[in-house]
Amino acid sequence: MSPLRMLYLALAVWGTIHPMYYFIGWFNENSWSLMDMVDAWHANLATSGLVWDLTVAAVALTVWVIAEVATRRNWIGLLAIPATFGIGVSCGLPLYLFLRTRPVT
Image 1 (spheres, helix red, strand yellow):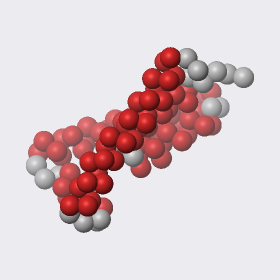
Image 2 (spheres, rainbow, N blue to C red):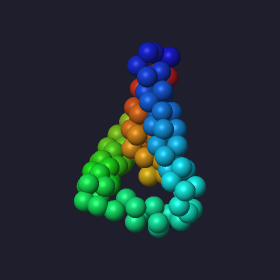
Image 3 (cartoon, rainbow, N blue to C red):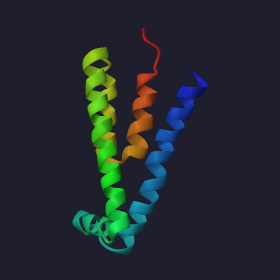
Image 4 (cartoon, rainbow, N blue to C red):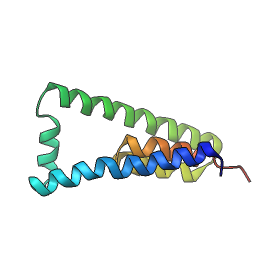
């Protein structure tokens, strides 16, 4: 595996673990209600701006993944979509780059 692919994989793992540490901590302190977390994301204008920034990035990544999968037939790349919306762009983007740069057989 190339150093670049290893970096993408490491970033995908980091992009999974680091945000989840904070999310799980928040859930443990508050409640395990997803709607309460969504409310917390919109606690002020700064957090709302960040939520929308990441939402637009997630949609752009999804469009890119679908367009490339349709062209390249690299179906495994579709795994980046649930990773993006289930975990976050911090996982989905480096995961897609990792999957996209695998050697073609």
